Image (cartoon, rainbow, N blue to C red; front, side, top):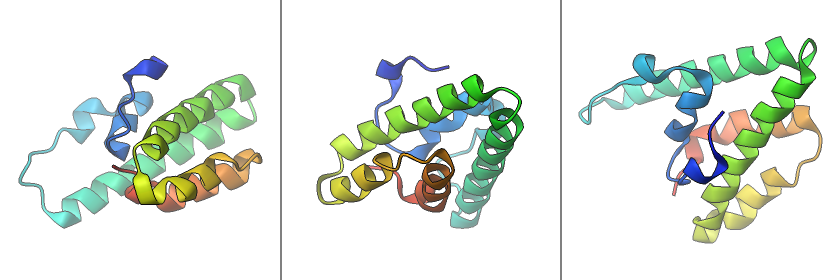
Length: 112
């Protein structure tokens, strides 16, 4: 897992190494909007697979992964200005399933 100090809170692409998808995600600066949406969908699919696969069989791994997601979102929230209350609202969700549902819904907006 990433060192908590490594997150910058710039955008959701920082989560790619947590999923081991670095090579798959290499994209150029000239990427089309559709390419970015496809990349976001791949990230969500991988995130869902990781959570669904580990949540029941390896809850400690799922908890660690969710902790990393929270650490990243904290960095985003701290730099977000007007959106800080929104991101903090997601961070305050205690139920893991609800937290992940909201995270997945708004991951494309997690940037500063």
